[in-house]
Every structure is written in C-alpha cells, then in structure tokens.
Figure 1 (cartoon, rainbow, N blue to C red):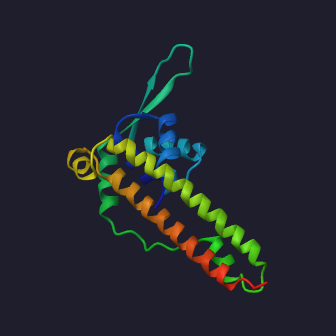
Figure 2 (figure 1 turned 180 degrees about the horizontal axis):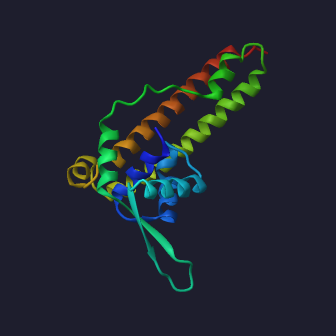
Figure 3 (figure 1 turned 90 degrees about the vertical axis):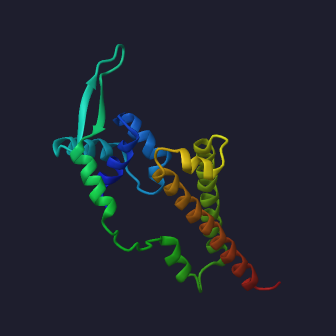
Length: 186
C-alpha cells in the first residue's frame, strides 16, 4: 500500500488543508501508516496532478494562503477499487523480536529493559486510542454509535489498533514473566 490511499481515505472525511491532514495523520493514521509532513505534501501534489483530488486556494489575512483538498470522483473510484482489492499478507518486521530471538547468552537485564520499554510504549498508545474512542463515542454506547455514524471505517481501524496494542501489552507481560522465572536464584 502507498501513502496515496491513506491520504485519499483521510479525505473521505471532507475537505481539508495539508496542515489539517497532517494533524489527522498525527492523531490517527500515523499509528498504522507513518508519514512525515513533507511526504504528505508531496503526495498531495501528486494526487492533484493525477486528478484524484482537487485543490483550491483560500486567501487569508495575516496568514499565508492555504490550499484546501477534496476528493474527485476519480479519487473516490480509485479508493473504492483499492478497498475491494485483497491486501498483501502482512509481515511483521520488528527489531525487538529479533533481539528476543538472539537473547540467549545476552544480558537478561538489557532484554528485560527493552521489553519494559515496548510495554510502556504500547500502554501509552493504548491510552491514546482509548481517548480517541471516547471522543468518537461521545457518551453513546458502541452499538448506538455504529448504527448512527456516517463512516464506520475510522472506528473499526481504531478498534484494530486497540486490539493490536492490547496484544502487545499481553505479550510483554508474558515475556517478562518468563524472564523473571528464568532469572538465576540468589
């Protein structure tokens, strides 16, 4: 998958400036598809040149003009085709897993510290995801939200992220338990 489809999907929410899209990436999409602001702006230019989005300039006083982007019908069609195409199987590329594979004979304290760091990171992301979920639900139950919302995709993506980070936390807990059980007595 390319950044192209992450940008097109973000524009399903409606018209947005490059700055607004970069904030969307920071808050939600970056957890699943990382991008720098520079990459995002280059992709917006390509999408506009390809006719998948339209850009309009909004004049501002005391600030530089900004460009607002919207999906074109060609962009919506391309996104529909992308959404219907089977994805490639995912492959985990995780340096920590290789370090765990290589840990025998290494310093168990260093390994433990790496796993504790991953666990703290996963807990932090999980807390952020749960805050986003609460904002989306806005006091409603999940069933009510899913019946009433215009777009269910962002919520389902968020639930995937929550499940992923919950599993990361569980795995870290298990690894730390095993490391503790294997620690030399004394």
